[in-house]
Image 1 (cartoon, helix red, strand yellow):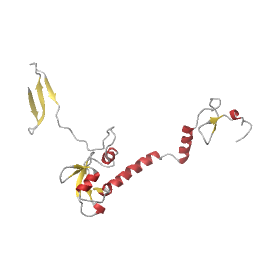
Image 2 (image 1 turned 180 degrees about the vertical axis):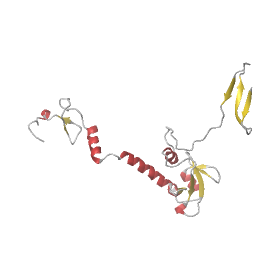
Image 3 (image 1 turned 60 degrees about the vertical axis):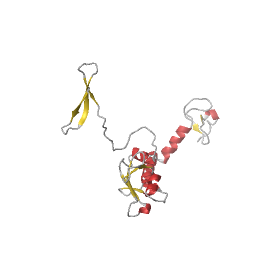
Image 4 (image 1 turned 45 degrees about the vertical axis):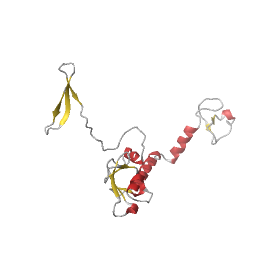
Length: 191
């Protein structure tokens, strides 16, 4: 036994159900409608398409409008909206891959990412380059001296290769070994 509870406009918001064993226990069932999120996804799954990668990294948003224009012509050959799975064409509501959208537009340019443009004029190639540049900047915030020092710290041993004790060590330039000057009989020499 269930009864709908309605909004002010008469639309069903959910159901109240009485238990089947005759007790007067009421439960409210969840609505089957879900709110769509239009921001970048924070899913932990591996991106399966270029578009899902761009969405996950906040470069483009789901449902952004795109147009296919061969060689930046004035009139768009096809229009659609971005989804995680591909581009949903506005004329037929079919979701296409980038190359599928290009073929659907009737083009033979064979450069779909370069010819699919966002409303702000950026091509998908430019969006990909923006993401690549963003990633490379994140990895290159250290100065060259810091990188060199960190490389040697990770690469070289922190103990003497002869006596296996730490201390003031001489690092080999050709391999990861390090030594005490006394272990190499170099204590009389000055660096």
